[in-house]
Image (tube, rainbow, N blue to C red; front, side, top):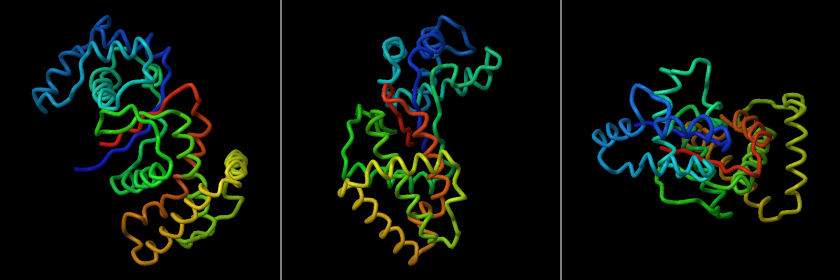
Length: 248
């Protein structure tokens, strides 16, 4: 089986206004959310642990506190019953209060990215809502710390030219240069943070020299994409929201 990793943030007002009616059956679809869950449970057993009432309550209160396992079932429902066979023309996922920040492209890239998440959280534990084996729900502050780590690490990779690609400062956009410099300065006096970035960089460099097709190599090859995407996520994340990383 492949691996999927997707990063989301939320707009609780939009979710309550536009998404809740579908979950609570105020708006009819070909299959109600309850019918959809029943079919999923017949196929996969009662391990889903998701109920329509539970999910409706979370969305009505604040979707930011949704558990990743519940959110995964919600996304399956949205994609199968609303977004693609949509009864509401010209609506997309953003209209329902869900913002996809990043969808990683392949299993190996997902593994490389989540390895870095594991490395960062080993040194800087985060507060996860817990109770899920298909992802995490963490504060924007915690995710921003990891995101800053990725920005500094991938920029160091790009500047080192490990993969023989000659990046110069002119290869980065003005916003990328400004945000990178802001983050670099913010953590310049944080010795622990700097050491973690440097140690991981040296590990990746050594690993790449020994095996340029292994798991660690994906972080090298995708450093440019990881860098630009992390910059983009830095711009979009607000401290009022939480971040869900689905990993399944």
